Each structure stands twice: as C-alpha cells, then as structure tokens.
Amino acid sequence: MSATLDAPSSERAREGARPSHAWLMALLRRLHFYAGILMGPFLMIAALSGLLYVFTPQLERAVYADALTGTQSEAPWSIDRQVRAAQREIGTDDAPVAVRPAAEGGTTRVMFADPSLGRSESRGIFVDPGTGRVVGDMTVYGTSGALPLRTTIDRLHRDLLLGEPGRLYSELAASWLGVMAVSGVVLVVLHRRRMGRGRRARVTLVPRQGEANAYRRTRSWHTATGVWLALGFLFLAASGLTWSAYAGENVSQLRSALHWTTPKVSTALPGSAPQQGAGDEHAEHHGHQGHQGHTDPSASFDAVLTAARTAGLDSQLVEIRPAASRDAAWTVAENDRSWPTQVDSMAVDPESLRVTDHVRFSEWGLPAKLTQWAIAAHMGLLFGLPNQIALAVLAVGLVVLVVGGYVMWWRRRPTRAAGAGFGPVPPRGALRSTPPWTWPLLLAVGLGAGLFVSLLGISLVAFLAVDLVIAAVVRRRSAWKAAQ
Image (cartoon, rainbow, N blue to C red; front, side, top):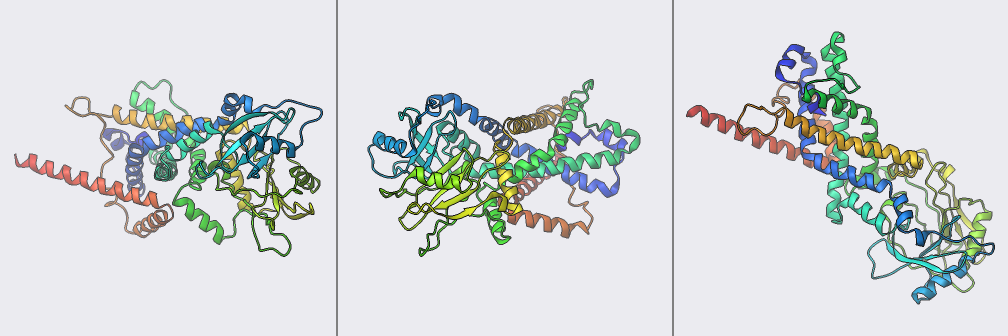
C-alpha cells in the first residue's frame, strides 16, 4: 500500500511532512513498495488458489456425489459388515487404517494403507450403509480423507504442486502479507497526521467515486481496501505461517516450550508401554503418515463406537482408528471443526470395551483452543458458509490490492519520457535519515523477525542487495552522462 500514499512531489511539498515522522514514512513506503512489486505474484497465486480451496466442500459434494451420498434404510448395515464389504472389494483381509461411519445421508468411508500411494495417502472405499454396496474407490489424503480434487487444490495453494521446494512460495507470501498489512496501515495513519485536521478528509477510508485523476482514484480504492481488510490479512498471515516449512517449525517449537500443544489421547493399555494417538490440529490440511491397522476376530468397530458413544462422544462426525498392535487401545475421535467445535477423543480397549483415556476439548488450554479455531477459520470450516464468504472477500480484496498496486505504479509513469514504462520508485535515503536512537530498535526487530521467520529475513536481505546494486548502476550511469 505504499503506492497509495506516494503522492507526486509537488503534493508532498505542499503537505510539509513532520520531521519526526518523515524518516519512518520514507522507510515504510520504500519497504512496502518493493514488497508489493516483488511479492505481488506470490500473493496473487496464494489468494486465487485459496479462494478456490475455500469452496472445496461444495465442489467435492458436487463432483463426488455418487460416492458421498448414501441411501436411507430402517435396517442399515453394521459398521463391521461395511468394513468386510470394503475388504472384499479390494481383495484383502488387512484391517483399515481408519473408518468414518456414515453421517446422516452419507456413506461410510473405509481407508486402507496402500504402499503404492504417496505419504499421507490411503485408499478410500465408500460404502452405502443402507445397501452395503461399494459406491466409490479413490485415493484420500490425510486424516480428513480429502478427495483428489481437494487434495490437488490444497497442494496448489500450499506448494504449487512442486512438493517441499514449492512450500517456500507460500511461506514468502504469508510472511510478507503480514508486513505489508502493518506497513500499509501505519502509512495511512502517519499520512493522516501529517496532513493536519484541516485536510484530513482527503485521506478517506471510503473510495472516492468522483475523483477525476485516475491515479488518485486507484489510490483511494487501494487505501480503503487495504485498511478495512488489514486485520483479516494479519490473521491469514499468522495462521498460514503455522503450516510453513521453516517458520512453522519455529512455531511448533515455541508452542512446545510454552506447553501450548494440543493434548493427545494415550492409547497405552494397562501394563503396556506408553503410547499416544494422533492429535495434529493441522491434519485436515496436510495429513499424516498412517499405520496399518490391526484387528483380531473379537474386535468390533460397532462395539468400540458404542462404548465411546456411551462415554459421551456425541458428534455425528467421528473416526475410528484400530490400534497398530494388540497391546494398544483403539481411538475414536470427533471430527467436527465447526462451531461449536467437537474434537473430543477417546481410547477404547477393544477387548474389554473400557475407555482407557479421554481428552475433552473443554479441557484444552486456551492457546490450544485458539490454535484449533484459527486453523479451522483459515480453512473456512469454523462458521460454515459465513466463514467461507469472509475468506472469499479477503482473497478477492488481496487480488484487488495487488492489481491496484501495479496499476498505480504504471499510472505514475512519466508519460513524456521516452522509454519509461512504469512510475518511479520511492526515493532512497530513508535509512540515512533515520534517527540514531532507532537503529538498535530496527536491528532488534529485523534480527528477531529474520530468525523466527527465516525466509522473511533472507528475502529482506535480498531486497536490500538488489536495491544497492540498482543504486550503484544508477550512480555509474549518472557519472558517465556527466562526463560526456
């Protein structure tokens, strides 16, 4: 949003910026400008792919309607019978890694390990609980059982379908989105202060429809959009970084050090070695590596689920995971991440049908709850359609800001200068005019951000290096022209 406040030189001269704020405005304007120009394509891709991902629940229901729609029956098949039907379909006696019993009007999802599939993928068999007929067979991803369409869109948003190297793009986009949101708002505040009360109406937070000057009209829309959506952008940046490769690992270590991690149900049976079940709040978005389930002839999915229901698990959306060995409990976990959130989990001894451990969401610490809600909101799951609409507004708003930034740069070009394609960049010298007392503060903030969000620090150093090279080239050309 720096371009939104980068008025022509004559206008800046009339406004007379206060000396105490001039250095900060110059510094933020240049930072915001370079970030917008260089990070704009990454932000555009993240916004468009994120917009598409938000509505994948509706897309999945439309594309995979045959596999996701079950028939109603007064005497539905038991879960055990449905599991056996799925095993017959693929010709195996192996136990599934997980089973998701059908919710009302849906199908039961039976997921099997398959060595031919990738990490976090499993083979999903969809069984109609009313007829026992297999109605779908496709690859599913993660503990959410994301289907191929959502998996592809998810990976496009997260890593451009390039795997681990591609995750660098999303981390850069998330980290710089936060920087641009903060710097843009601060620029607006400082600009309003330097203009004084008598002219404050010119920096309006409502776009000026009747502005004749095309550049100022675009700047008005850019400023208003950026300020109104800034909090949403900060939320997307902070929650998105928890999935990133490097900053995400730092976030995980910080949460562990502060004991803010998500509680996990223990699957250890009396007399066995301590074990823990899955409790990754990111599982819906990135999946995990599952194990091959283990059952014995006396184990029953129906009985284990009944035991969990009796103990208080009441969400329609649950997942049953057989133990990896005979000396461990099965887990039954709620999977409703909407509001109110239902993600309680239980460990059930498949032989005695006794609940051996119970982790309730109401007993989670506040940081863990906030993390759960933030992730669900980032994915559009927390409040259903209103959540999806809010994310769509943010995505469209980000696209408008990126496009508007490039349009403003182009509209500020010197139209009478031959060969000039875009407008000038904000003037150099911001760091030289910075008061001495700010250097320790700027250094501390820069080092802290660079260490915690390493790609942000690396890219910032790259920006400075490019800027220094450009400055050197400009000085050499000026000296050469002067010598002519």
